[in-house]
Image 1 (cartoon, rainbow, N blue to C red):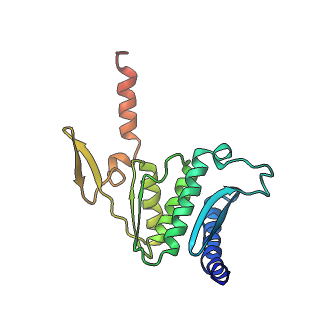
Image 2 (image 1 turned 30 degrees about the vertical axis):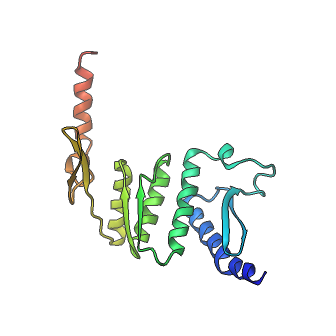
Image 3 (image 1 turned 60 degrees about the horizontal axis):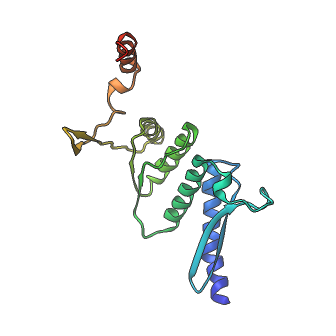
Length: 190
């Protein structure tokens, strides 16, 4: 009993506290709660809908959108990373799937803040998200290194170090899009 009480006080309560703070940064009105149970060091955590907001028992899958589920999963992961002092880095592979532009901006700021304490590596296809990260980093004086990884001639894995579409002037203006639009507009239907 004492072990369970100590674990609850030192681990579970801290986890719930950090999770709630992280989730609040993403969106104030995500009515989920973290439920933990178990004994003798084996803890199972489950993300559930807040019973105060949803009096009947619905599953998270039936109520939250894909973007909201993604935000909750990222908040859970970042909480775990924050509390794990043995971990030296955070690596995310396309973390913004199903997130709208506002959430991408918030997540970019969150990751840039984390980069002050540890290395953050993000793989993404989303140029807008890469742009958000770059702009947030510029504001707080953090350094960003971007690499462009492409497929060429049917072979993947060509790396262009210290370069990405975000760094290219062609991608910082709408000129390229306008040129392609003009070509498409004048092209034959086939």
